Length: 351
Image 1: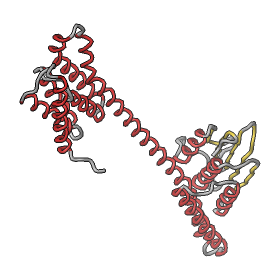
Image 2: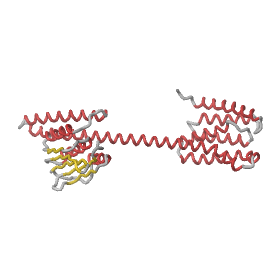
Image 3: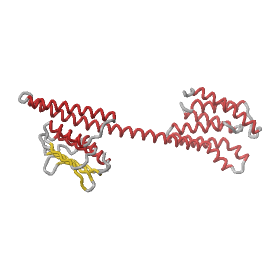
Image 4: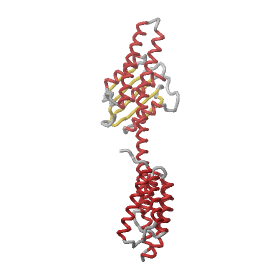
C-alpha cells in the first residue's frame, strides 16, 4: 500500500485532533478549560506539524509541535489529544536522528512541557513534583522508545554490512584460490610449450592438453564458487590437482593417509600455487596425516625459499580459514631451505 503524502497526513491529523479534542472537552464539561478560536489554531498547528513534518523534517516538526502544545497548555486550554502530538513528534525525532541530536531535544522539550503545565499543576494538586514528573514522561517515554528503535536499526544495518563484508571477503578468497592456481599452472605449462615447441612437438602438445584441462577445470570450479552450487573438493580432486601441477613441470610427491576435508584441499592448492609461482625449479611434497586427534597438512618444496617476510593474500587467506576452523597455521622457510607450509586441523569439524 502506497504511503499517503505528508500534507494529506497533516491535514487528516488536524481534523482528527480537533474533533477528538472537542469530544473530550465536552465529556469533561469544561472542567479543565474551554475551547476558543486561539485554541483551535494551536491544535491545528500542533497536529499539522506532527503529521506533515514527522518524516521530512522531524526536528522542525518537534519544535513547532512543542511550541504550539506548550502555548496551548500555558493558556489554560483543556487537556486532550493535543498531548499525543508531542508524543508522536518526539518519537519520530528519536527514531530518525542520532542520540547526540535527540537527547538534547528531549531535555528541552521535557522542561518546556513541564513549565507550560506548571501553573495549573500548582493550582490543582498538592503533589506538584509527582505531576510535573508525569508531564515530563509525556516526552521522555516516547524519546526512550524512539531511541531504542534507532539503536536497533543501526545495529541491524551494522550486522548486514558486516555479513556482506565477510561474504565479499569469502568470495574474493575463493576466486583468488581458484583463479590463482589455474592461471599459475596454465602460465607455467604455456612457458614450457613455447620452449619446446620446435624441438619437441609431442611435449608441447601435452602441455597444450594440460592447459586445456586446467583452464576448463578452473573455469568450472569458478562458476561453481560464484553460484555456490558445487561439490566439495576431496581426495579425488586433490589427486587431479597434483596431476595438473606435475603436468606443468613441477614434480610433486603425494602422501595421503587421512581424510581430505575441503579446507585441507584449499591449503594444498594454495601452497602448490605458490610453488609454481615463486619457487623456481623445485620439487614439492604433500603429506596429509592424522596425529593426536588432529589432521596434519604439510607442503614443502626445495625451491628458492622465502623472498619476503610479508604474507600475501594467499597465505593470509589460508591462515584465516585454518584459524576459523579452530586449527593452527604456519608458513616460512624450511629447515633445509625452500618453503614449508603446515596446518593442524581438528578432526571432525574441518570444512
